[in-house]
Image (cartoon, rainbow, N blue to C red; front, side):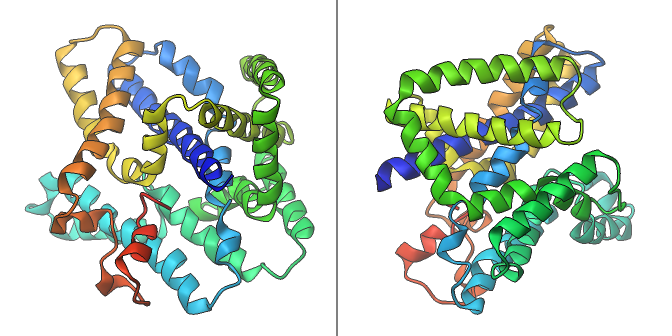
Length: 346
């Protein structure tokens, strides 16, 4: 069961990261060319569960370390994500503010420092994960049912418009912490659900079809962000992705998707730069007139480019952009154990 368990999680992360990159690729390109395409419909369909499932999966293995030594936890869950957030924020700032570096370097520094507290770039997920890990460590001794109920109330209050702090970190906490905490607190139930889906795969396939029709109908009617409905859609969609991932793993289908999931954080850290290049190139040349197809091409470039880069720099000093060097660790590990801390394996 151990191997299959890891496999389906990788498939799930693969689906999640592609949906996230798809959103950025499609919506940004549509804004750039002033139109919409068929990919916009796919993005709208996935909106209720795209981030809920990503956060739920992120919390699945937290029970392995949350009650361990505080020093180890800070190293693996705080410094680890802080390292990659700061590093890639610096790289993105240099890439996207290059025209200001020589003319107004102080402004570039301010942009960088501001996003340490107010994450506005595509890297906000890494920043938010760090916050979730810290909070979950603090509440680990509180009954899980109580924390979960409170997180549900926060989510409903957020969609009811009762929570609007002006700080994206707290607003996103109210919106999505419930899914991360559920992944951590109810991980055994999630893994049991995935196992049952493979044991009764015919029923699971029928349930997936019914869910897809139901999710599409609610999104089409514009009810997806109603208080309570958003929570229901988020969990239903998250478990639909768990089901799909378990079935793909069971039948050993779509290994490229599994590979993408295994390296999902590599894609997440890197995709924004090749995505912007592909978007500008297609928008300026008009090489692909259909907006939906052009968005699909941008998505492909944004997902594949980071994976190619990762393979090219493996074994070189540049791998430090994906693997945290020993100098940034609180604890010394053997190379085999250190590899686990690689965001590509997280």
